[in-house]
Image (cartoon, rainbow, N blue to C red; front, side):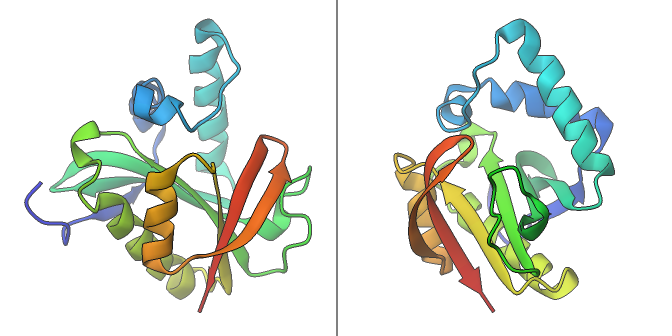
Length: 172
């Protein structure tokens, strides 16, 4: 982990899902990615959900790499198309992001900030996003600091199907 300049993204593939399952089970990830499923059902749920993302026309999932090693997951999605209690008042051109760092050795090293910065460039440039939003667990101080550092601004707390979060946004 010498340099953060080498972060790059590759589209998520079906063979990557086992790595996601491993990461989701790590305490630092589980703490903020709520899951009510039993362990028996968890793997199948993750496999189904992220397999659907791979073929989706409105979710764009990626693995993040540092020094050619996978370190985390990030996706962009068309927030205005969500529905079902999610972002129903967002305008066309509003994208959302979800991400986590799976490798503990990358925590507190600026990797998350770099991931978000570089991924925002992709969303604004390649996907023509007008605004990007992210919902953050109010207890996730590391994530809140990362998003503020990148330039996200809080829009206040929101109630979602997954609970209460702080909604943050950034535009270009």
